[in-house]
Length: 95
Figure 1 (cartoon, rainbow, N blue to C red):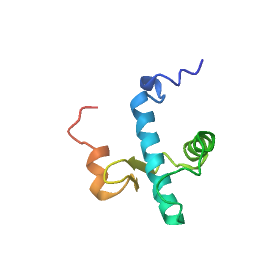
Figure 2 (figure 1 turned 90 degrees about the vertical axis):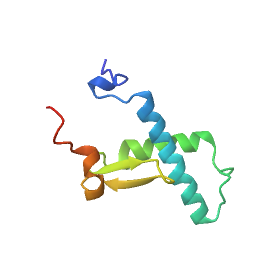
Figure 3 (figure 1 turned 60 degrees about the vertical axis):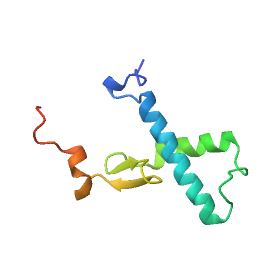
Figure 4 (figure 1 turned 180 degrees about the vertical axis):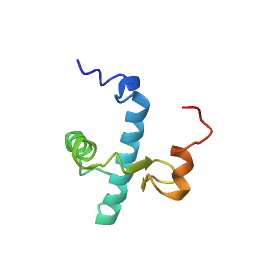
């Protein structure tokens, strides 16, 4: 078994999965508003949402260079961004 359900071995825990789902739905609803569908989401079924979620985070998303934030209506940011650097690099933390 690959033990992908154990976060301490590199898997995805429930908290991370919840944040990924929230981020996906935030971006999906923003895209719907931009396309003129409204914010109701009635034109999607759960199957298509699941497939779109798996396509985004399984194929398209670059985890090495991109971070996810669900604050302030959600956004993606480059991990090397100067105003976000303190979240990733803490020189006082013991190694």
